[in-house]
Image (cartoon, rainbow, N blue to C red; front, side, top):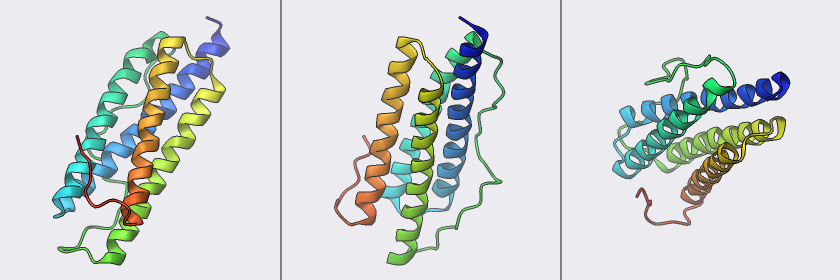
Length: 155
């Protein structure tokens, strides 16, 4: 593989790893401060997803470059509004909008990462699946905010 192609792949993988590190920290902070059990389960689902996605991306990265991103257990520099004991409608809405923004940011990174590099077939398929799951997370937050779903599916 040519150096410039390997460099673009490494750049894309590193960008995705940084996003997932941020996503893990964001949702762990929300888990720690929430009393809404449904949202805690949903946030934990996204933490687990990002950890698994990161693991798979880390596995592929050494073929293209050295890893320059460390996994995050908690991103304490990422500031979020703490949940109040009982979220009122507006606070919950603001939180869901914040989560939508994070997922939109991730989708942009996925699109740029895939557009800038010619990923090997197996890796490209995995990255596309990750992007679809991130799109599903975004739709979930939108539907929650718009009260279009009654119960959160976390399985």
